Each structure stands twice: as structure tokens, then as C-alpha cells.
Length: 424
Ligand SMILES: NC(=O)c1ccc[n+]([C@@H]2O[C@H](COP(=O)([O-])OP(=O)(O)OC[C@H]3O[C@@H](n4cnc5c(N)ncnc54)[C@H](O)[C@@H]3O)[C@@H](O)[C@H]2O)c1
Image (tube, rainbow, N blue to C red):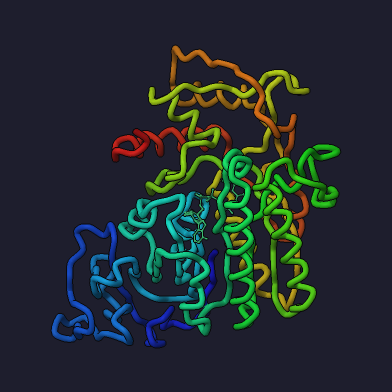
């Protein structure tokens, strides 16, 4: 989940000190310069004072990205860096693939950000790399815990929530459905209680094109009847969307968007953040990159689909575009006084798995790889891609990044992961 904060300059949880800069703490910060222990004042160091319970420290205006303040061993999971300016935003599950891009973009646009992630499918790599980057000047407050603990964050400065936190493996959800129903639904319920209790005005929910199951026609529009999804994962998204509708029916003051993502791939080339699941490399791009890097086999699941080359067709959008979509949506709904909408987020173009793989090999100069084809996976459908016109017309959002650039970025990211000792 992501919670957007307010335009209060003092930022999140810092006692409302105007123009405050805050603090990086904790796990993975590594070479942090320790300026103070719990409860110690930083005045002696010339950078400010300890505020409140020693979790957040105000360190002044011009300290910039170079200052890292460790504020106590028992708050090791808290990460706050930089100058608190503009709106503060809380992201639930912000260490993951999509949301780490959103964290970065929000910070670049002067939103303060609160991240809540229990690291069930990520580690601190993305957030550490964001914290080390020099591209933003807002506060990042990172809490490694379950999004059920969102209550610990002062709602006064929060202008919105983006609820990303969920398990997302279709295959695992078939093997362990209760794990998915429990986490994905309970985490949403916690967020809705928080939003409702404190009247947080904006909420964006990460939904998925899996809610369409096998659509009657493609490109699929938001008017496609929601039937049943072949996987428990997809079912959780259908149920969550329904819960959100019921919540909105009783809380007409809130703006809520359910964004139905198609297939995000790629990432930014200027900062090392990306998909790094701790729960297994199951996505198409993870498997493809592992194969390209000589770490694993790769099999296309089935070439007997009802498509031109027999492999399944999907809509691959760049995760950077998807991230920008969240910002544009947020800034759009912040102008409203109560609304509920559902949008597809995709390119509007379908690409077969075989053409994706061939393009990936070509743009990355990878030769002498023979692609194997195996059995179909249960639950996979022939083709789905978005009709992306509703979000273009109502929000003005369109994907911009081309497939080749996404595939290049994906390869570079995975090479980086290997260089850091991941994916072994
Ligand atoms: N990546 C895709 O292909 C895709 C497509 C459609 C929809 N989505 C949805 O987008 C969202 C983000 O996907 P992603 O690819 O970034 O996944 P990801 O697994 O990289 O990130 C999810 C993050 O949520 C965290 N998390 C899970 N349950 C949590 C909980 N109860 N409390 C706190 N943190 C929790 C995980 O540790 C992880 O960091 C998910 O809701 C997913 O269902 C993803």
C-alpha cells in the first residue's frame, strides 16, 4: 500500500517541523554516517534536533542527500532520507518491483513517501538504491512491516494511499490458495479501515487484467463483464475490487481508482531498481533473463494457442510508464471530491511470447540460444491486451516507452542483480 501525504512542509511524522530534512536509518544502509543515538540531540553536530520518539530527526535544510542519521538500533527498519518538501506519500509494499519505481517517481516530484513492506517478496535492495540516489529531495520513510500496521502512521499528513501489497504468483496461488486469500484480502481490509477511519481522501488499488479471465473479445475494455478468474490470485483481485465498490458506496467522499495492470516489464536505466522477488523467479521476464544469463532453462509454455504463431499474446507495458500512470492518476483524483473509477493500464498492443523472446534476444545481442517449447500451463488464455482509451481520455495517460527499450532495461537489470550476487 502507498499512502499519499499532505502538502505540509514538515512531512511525515516529524512533528510538523517546517522545511525539515530527515533521516536514513537501518538495515542495509551500510556506510551510514552515525550522527546520533536514540534520544540524542543533533544540535551538537550542527544539524538539528531529535524529534519525538527518536525515530525521526530533523536535520536542517541544506544537509542534502549526504547525511544519514542512525537513530537507534531498535528502529533499524526505518529509512527516511532527505528534505521533506511537498506532499508526503505512504506506499504499502514499496520495496517491490512496481512500487519501487513509484516511490522513486514520487520522491522526484517532491512528495514525501512512507513505505510499508513486510519483505515477503522483496528485500531492501530497491529502497537502498533509491536512498543512495541523488535525484530527489523529499523524505522517504521506510517501515519493514505488515501493511496491517499502517495504523502506526500519523494520518494527518497523509493525502492518499496506493495499495500495492499483495502476493502475485498465479502458480503459487493455485498451490496455496488460502495464503493468497488471506494476505491479499486482509491487507486491503486493513487499508480501507485506515482510509475510512481517518478520512484519507485518495486511494489507488493495484488490480490486474486477470480479473477479465478469458475475455469475450480483445482489446478488452473496462466494460467487459467480470466473470471468474482461473486462479485464486485473480479471484483475490476480483474480490478486492468488489470490496472497494462496497466501501465506496458507503464513503462517497473518497476518490478511489482500481488500476488493472496488464504485463509490466523493464525499468529505469538511470537507477538500479527492478524486479527481485525473494519468493521465486516465476515471471516470464525473470525466467527469460535467467536463461539468457546461463542460470536456468527457459521454456515457452505452449505453442498451440489460437494465435498467429501459436504462443499466447499479452500486453507488455514498461514499468516506468506504469509508475508515471500512478502519479498522473493521483494528481487527477486529488482534484475531485469523491469518485470511483476502474482503468486498464496497458499499451493497447498485443505481443506473442515467441515474438517477445525473439525481440529480447535481438535487442540484447544474445546469440546461439535455442528456445524450447513445452506444455501449456493450466489457466493461461490465448490472448489479452488492453483497450487503453478510457484512461487516455479521462486521465490523459498513454504509454510511451517502446518494447525494445523495456527489453534492454530488463536485461541490464538482471545483469546487475547477478553482479550483486542475486539470482544464484
Ligand atoms: N507485476 C505484475 O505483473 C502485476 C500485474 C498486475 C497486477 N500486479 C499487482 O501489482 C502489485 C505490485 O506487484 P509487483 O510486481 O510490484 O509485486 P512485488 O511482489 O514485487 O511487490 C509486492 C510487495 O508487497 C509486499 N507485500 C506483500 N504482502 C504484504 C503485506 N501484507 N504487507 C506488506 N507488504 C506486503 C512484498 O514484500 C513485495 O515487496 C500487486 O498487488 C500485484 O498483484 C502486478
